[in-house]
Length: 205
Ligand SMILES: C[S@@+](CC[C@H](N)C(=O)[O-])C[C@H]1O[C@@H](n2cnc3c(N)ncnc32)[C@H](O)[C@@H]1O
Image (cartoon, rainbow, N blue to C red; front, side):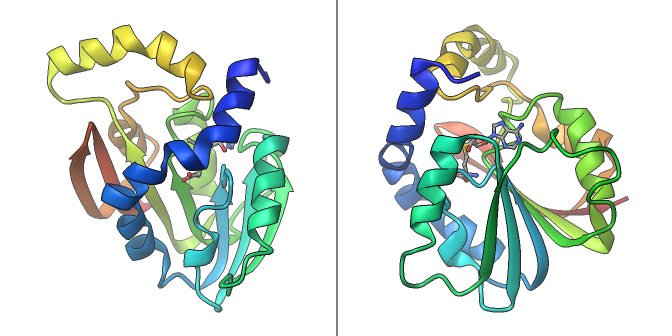
């Protein structure tokens, strides 16, 4: 549901992310995305921050439920330096009927979105079914801390954080959900930037 906070968050998103991107995230995004080719689904593409990072052999379907984000992403497609073929569709990960995307994608990309989508475990299972055999899921995400004190602090702060940050959850154990949903990490980098993060490539078990 669109609230005044969601609207503010969406409009300020790129500015709020400027420093974290420069100090910790943009290099990891580039590392994750620059070599991908074939049919790619990007879930929750936001303002289109990943779009300039795909190469000319990438065909990207970007789904994003928020019209405010979609409008910003469409503008970002007008920038020079976008090499991939990119189509943006206004849709959430949970809006497609069962079986809609089954076995269609070589790669699925989720950056800073598994913290926000509803029913993460159920939706990760659906996402897994959308990969072609041998396909890969690429994830950049902050996760619940392993340290129980820090995790408790994340849980206490979560209601306010989530309201101000477009429904983002600070305390999701997304690394565990990936495993429970049937993904195996081929390569995963755990790092800290204010919060614990993962940057990983996953295949179906
Ligand atoms: C923190 S932003 C991340 C945007 C972008 N992926 C990035 O890396 O900067 C979270 C995004 O998830 C989107 N989102 C929220 N609910 C979603 C859903 N059900 N399905 C797909 N995306 C969703 C939001 O609209 C928002 O664009």
